[in-house]
Length: 132
Image 1 (cartoon, rainbow, N blue to C red):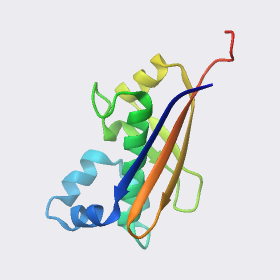
Image 2: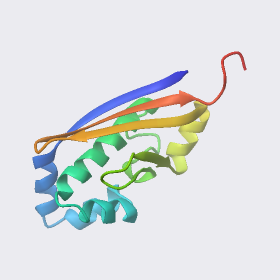
Image 3: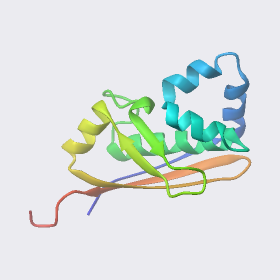
């Protein structure tokens, strides 16, 4: 059973501007894990990867119903997987606690991007069978 759905879209050019700014390293370290940073920086178009991962973080926060509040922050949501592999999401701290309180058993995520935009869809699946 589905307990949450979230979708988000991020402008790739906006992410490029952030990455080119003097504060880009601070932004990256505040929003992304070391693993996420390495994965995106290893690609031919890092801004697309960062934009897609940020869209997934935002979509997950929407699916939880919290947005980036109540301790659910982008840093607590990790989008894992290399550029050509199936992405997954791992949660820590408050994001994990909110998901557990909703009995989330599985997190499904789909990412896509063009030169201009990146989009993510997140579906949260209930942990129990109907009738439990």
